Image 1 (cartoon, rainbow, N blue to C red):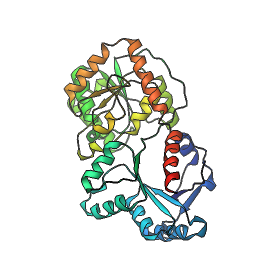
Image 2: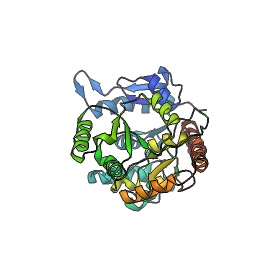
Image 3: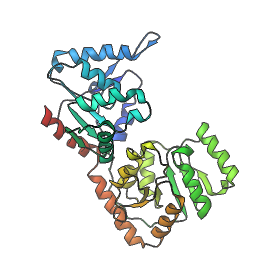
Image 4: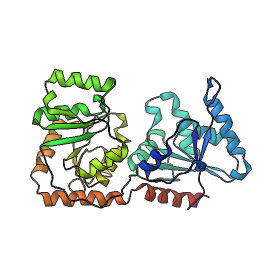
Length: 338
């Protein structure tokens, strides 16, 4: 389809895991490892030194450099050859976390040859925040792996499966409030060690809801997919309102929907671009436990046939967003600028 190289800082990489997760067929010679360390000295300057060699290589004289990394994008813009292009993919507003990045971020959004965004909300917020039009741009939603056929399910409301981080501030706290209010059991798939796990264990003890939570352990990526295919519970995306809510679309949302599931997600603008309430999933008022409970109770009133119809709509909507289809959309846009 096109000649592409993946450029990465030199570090251990399990190529099989990468290929498995993103449905790729990468080989070792598809990757250029750039040194970031010499002896005991580690620095971005070392990485940039070797990146400059790639930029200046005559065989790359008309290359397109594609990155999500803010400072790498800045370096590329400052050092590229006349016929080279720099493409930036925006998933957030870096300046929200560090005001010192304002000028750099604005410069990149203004001067990049093309800007991709993973949802319309992010692109629109960046336009407003920096006062830019960002004309040369397009939206390409996050991707997902979808290897299995649609699976009809007999939905069960006695428990809820949760996959992901055990950090309470990422929204799991809302799930605990929901469990406490409804006495529904939570089956948590994640890392059963570390500070976040211990904090969660202590919180369960304090709230006296240890009996409602079962820790299932951390699954390898291929086992996560199998579990999602077999899952017959309503999958809830927890939420906490923050400045980043107008930018973020969780990858797990795409994984859930791609594997024949009914999703109940927060109504943040980026999420609402993907989940159409009552059509391919359901939305609740973000950060509101009462709204979450009310929408869950509504879903319980629907028949199994209706829920399978909704999960099939989710499955079909995600078939447009496989990693391969995402790449095709990106390449079509890149062909226009080259």
